[in-house]
Image (cartoon, rainbow, N blue to C red):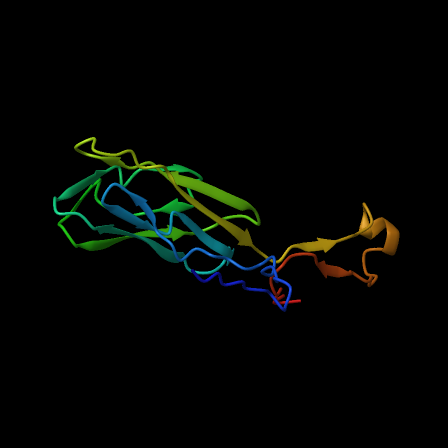
Length: 172
């Protein structure tokens, strides 16, 4: 009998903090769900809605019926136009599109709670999150500019963009 001894010549390296390993779908019974956490990242509040999807694949031999696809629980900035019921034939894959339209410079989250119609397996909630971003303007004036500078005086106004997006000022 032979015994092989392997030695590591280089130390093991860890992945960078911002690395994401999410290539493995969540498998429940004969249903694959990918991704099980839908992350929109940063979306500008003045842009069109960002759309991403969650894929469902039936890896079994029987039809799977999912209920509750139209019910998002959480922040109302997430939406879907899905019908409440989705049937997946054996080997079939379908995608549920989710839209994210943030309204403020804030973090948002929601969940989709699905049910398998025959009760064969329980599906954990699908997590959804995203962050609205916007230019944030900070300006400082005296309490009463006319008293400080007179009605016809000019004064300096400093504007700072403390946000995460570019700021455009029109009609100055």
